Image 1 (cartoon, rainbow, N blue to C red):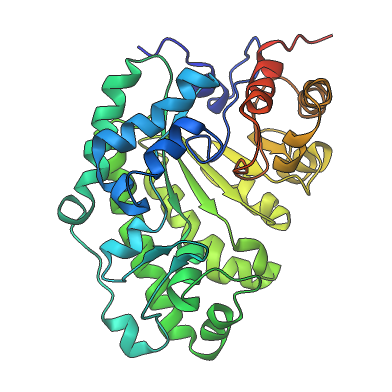
Image 2 (image 1 turned 90 degrees about the vertical axis):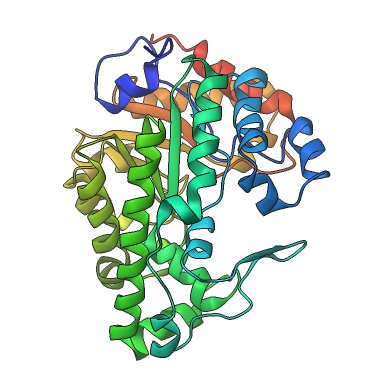
Length: 342
């Protein structure tokens, strides 16, 4: 039995004494302890060494004390397993030396054997679960098929992902073939994560907001929904689409247990768009963690009041930024723990 099960209870929509809190990218660069390991091992080496990945996952549980852990890994381990070479270049970020640009390229992409290609992630989950000792739940995650597609086709990060979008519009058959391969792989991958011991999963649609509402339905949501349908029977599923407020009504009709909201959508609108019955997660602007600590605490309490105590998970509206002071991250978590409804 997990000792602190607030997060899992909120996902079920149960009445809670206070909402649970965790932060996207909480296992990461804002922590000096993380930076010490970063200086020793390159990025994907950290992902592939179970003991290191587990240590990074547990660091924020010890230091800032959120109500859930999220496994240290990366969404791009999935395309790596699918025969797409992905590097992490200093100062550049994700880099795909041979981007997918044609139907012939799509043919070379495989739906892999997860145990053979991503077994190290499952090993990291098992080590992490031992280290957590049932103190808090562990979240597993994957990128949305559209977000993985963006990197695979564009070849790197982008402000607009014009090449990825152009591929969809000029060769939709090849694009849908690739999106389906990514979807099939992601379903297999997340199912293995659940078997290995994660207590919930989150799908990150980081680049969904690049698409128009109509194109979002065709090239992103229908693939995310396949994953939700496949996983919802075995674990709670959270869907987070950055910039995708326009899709919240459709998302709320799915089998997802919770929907993440970024800071551009107000709590009032998020409840309105989702019908007020599904658990919501978010949506503090990560840059706001640069505010003075009393301001952070005041704003967190106002955010909880606006969303409501129940069917709500406190989080940021995107990942925590690398330059945030640790004390400010702690203040964000503490503000939630100090919350009392008036």
